Amino acid sequence: MPRLFAALLLLALSACASTPDYPPPAEPSRKHALPETTGPHRFLHAAGTQWVDEAGGPVRLRGMAFGNEVYSKNPLPTTHHGEADYARLRDMGMNLVRFYLYYGTLEDDTAPFRYKQSGWDWLDRNVAWARAHGIYLILNLHVPQGGFQSLGEGGALWSQPANQDRFVALWRAIAARYADEPVIAGYDLLNEPVVPRGKQQWQQLAQRTANAIREVDRRHSVIVERVNAVASKWDNDAEMNFVTISDPNVVYTFHFYEPFAFTHTHAPWAGMARVEGGQWGPQRHSEITTGFKRYLDWGARQGVPLYLGEFGLIRAAFEANRNGLAWAADMIDLAEAANLPWTWHSYHEDHFALYYGYGTPINPDKANQALIDLLRDKLAR
Image 1 (cartoon, rainbow, N blue to C red):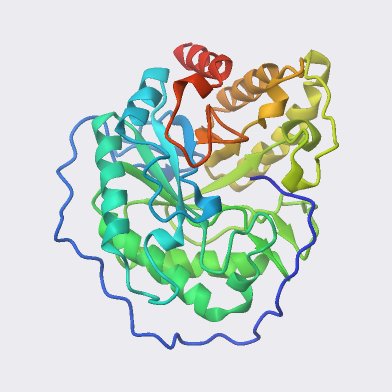
Image 2: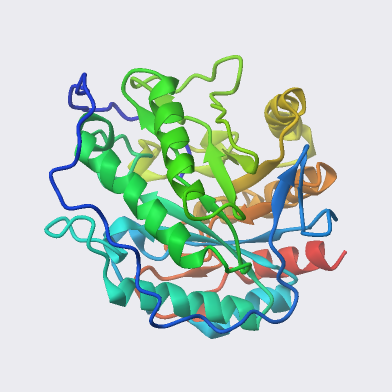
């Protein structure tokens, strides 16, 4: 989710790094080898300002976020989606899923560094489904050890070095298991980091994590997100809160929910329960073009590829003549004009969704059909 105006209650950051008290992580089991890839999938990598395939040709990635019930910390969200949902996305013209992960899918707090076969099996099934329907996956650690970042409740990632050790080790294990799997487009390290002291905290952890991934996997892109907030301040600096790392294959990602009052109309968790975002129309187009351009300008200055990892609208924005479809159309047009890879947030939940109904199986009767039709039409063009 985007930045939220909530106060952070964070623990004091430990001044010194530590070595984990746990045994070193074992390499993930390869007993259940994935089938050989067939179809359109090719390894992708960063080249200048583009994301390209093995032949050096630019790729067009457009898709959807699978939220996977991470906010309720469901380790195996089997009712969130199945193979049929990959087919639905492909039928809409999409070829990408940003796949949200809760660390508890693979690791329990009572057994750190010991990874669960049930979690690997769930990921393997999704890789197989994605392969069968021509969909790429971006694995995104949305709820890491130490807590979900976006709401300001994840301070333990930064205050407890053991959580960072586990974070790095988990990514290394994921990369070791999927090093030879081209269905995976990249590793999106951490969703919307919120740090207590400064951007360098995320830069250092991102660099350390990328280094660990490169010990076992030199082919997949590492995806690094900008910092969402620093010490309860949600302002952007001159670099739009991005941090950069040293790696030959890195893509930088940002989320876009401007204007916040419109995209989060009446959102209770964001302190917006009584805030009315108004109606969207052509006269408001400048409200997104100016903000969007700031991210594009940063990418151009750095000479790096960008990925629009999240954008979307709360359900209320599609109601009461607020004209959310026009905002969605404007945003898709902006992303397409910039030739950005993008993923809409999200596929199946209560608030931001194509299919409403958090924690329940997909019900076509609860679809945001107008949005589905818009996306299909835009992608067909």
